[in-house]
Length: 330
Image (cartoon, rainbow, N blue to C red; front, side, top):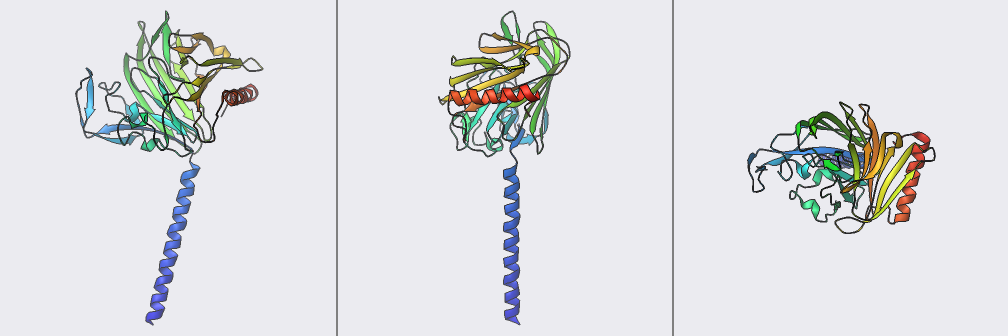
């Protein structure tokens, strides 16, 4: 009788182990099938204090992910309140982050893996991502520019960022088909004019590009996006039907340093190309209608990625052909 009980016990244990392994295998498979992610992570449990940079800093807190956020008045650059300084979004190819402060620039996380990594970025030190990690690193030097695909306003050859805003709200959303960041700026003041601006950034599985849709509450002259000018090769091209175009750069322009390609696809009827002080710009025509464009970064160390300028331009031409045919990329 004891032998039967022992045998049954071993059989039950074996079944349990197999079931657990099958469950883990299913969970692992499910995890690897998810190819996009967006997040925003804020510090809590600490306090705001006067910092050495002349502004408030948040100290002694720990980071917690949230789905939405009203940016506190105290928050600015290097205030240590938002993990990696703003919302982040990624595909299995590349990651991006938005400085959710007066700079309002977009930076690139170059990835050497096709895994999703943002949930771990910055946890081992606020700006540890500036050093090479197992997953990759922050690769773009934004400086005084727009980075890639962010929004500013140029008036009389002067670029206005987001130094004066009544309030800013940000939220993130993750679905099986995409991940997105939504930012609402209320009372953005530039050159004596105020406007509300909505910015939605969406990324898709297996894609490098972000779809960026903006809308202003009033038709405002000078709203623009662009690519930081690091003095490398610059390109422009129009689609066959002359409806879409792109501006792009390629060359050694990362913090590594090594090769990076950046591009913005835009509808020609919505914007004009010009060169700004720090960026190659797309200056949008005044409208209250939504305006959509696509921006991307292609790093040479990306897993199975684009390694040369020739490959990069071929990739851009393929995307331009899709826009020419379908009028959308996603």
